[in-house]
Image (cartoon, rainbow, N blue to C red; front, side, top):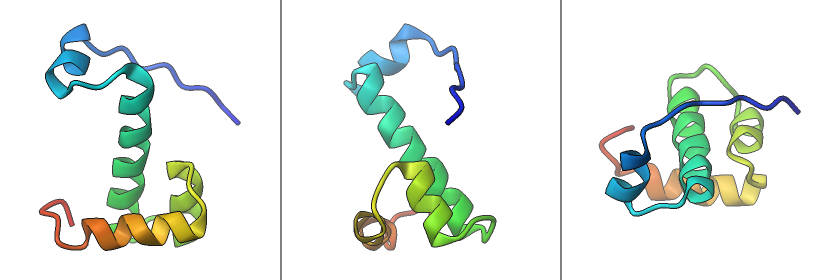
Length: 70
């Protein structure tokens, strides 16, 4: 696994009321949902990027199906 470092302003975490670890988890899920919806990656790849099992990934897709990002 590769590690990627991203610099973000401290205000991001306080504005979203998230600690950095929680923020990164949500960012991985959001990216995976977006790339999957665009047809760039498979469900298996999306689940892996999001750090979820395929079952958990299915639940995420169900949650986001009515979301404006899809």
